[in-house]
Structure formats: C-alpha cells, structure tokens
Amino acid sequence: MLIRAGEPKTHDSVDISMWNRLKTWARRMKRDTLALYLARQDPRVPWHAKAMAIATAAYAFSPIDLIPDFIPVLGYLDELIILPLFIYVTIRLIPADIMVELRAQADQRLSENRPRSMTGAVVIILIWLCIAALVVWWFIK
Image (cartoon, rainbow, N blue to C red; front, side):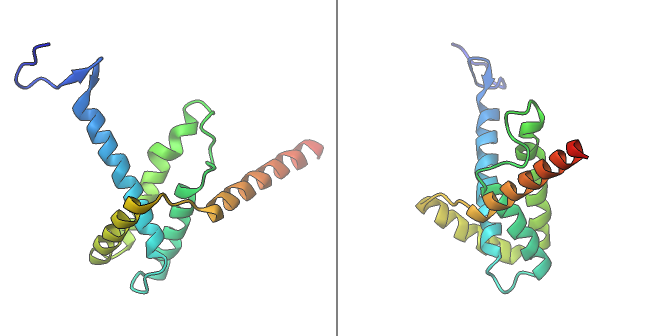
C-alpha cells in the first residue's frame, strides 16, 4: 500500500491518527477523573470544587451508569457529553497549580492499579430505585 504525503494513514478505512487522538483523550479523561477523586482530600481545594469533584469522580468510577448503555444513542450520552462536561467544569474550579500536582499523583496511581467507587455505585442504584418507586407510585395512583 502506497501512502502519499499529506494523506492520513488508514487501516481498514479507519484514520489511525484519529483513533490515536481518541485513545489519548480517553486516557486524559481517566487521569483527570482520578485527579478529581484525589482533590477531595487536598486542603487547598475550595469546598465547592471538592463537592463537585466528589460527585463527578463517584459517577465516573461507578460500575453503573445513570443512563444504561443498552438504551440506543442516549446510553452513551453520559460518557461522551455529560461526564466530560462535568470533568471540565470541575477542573476549572480547582487552581491550576494544584491540578498539575493532582494529575501527577493520578498518573502515578494509574500505573499501579485501577480505581473503583462503590459509593458511586450505591448512589446510582439509589437513584434508579427512586425512579422505579416513582414510576410504580404513578401507575398505582
């Protein structure tokens, strides 16, 4: 296969550079989410940023999604739009120098093991149970 200068490298009709950018973006999202999780313990982080960081990290690390992935289109809405938006907003609330340190700590921890949040899973399960109870109550009424 001959590749001309200026043409994107492809493999089976997939732009390799685009695929690499997506993988890099996903790694940064994971690192930033862990950095937000670590921000909850840093005394230099403002309380409102900590609250947002805890909520964002708990949802991101939860094994259960608020919008289940099996729902067409909407199922991936949280991973593609909502979660990155929350991460972006939360990062903006944390001073830049502190965020640099938190990202370095997150990089170190990610090289060691994968984080999970059971608290996040419990919160999502409680939200689903409340929704189910409201639906049942609405049908009974």
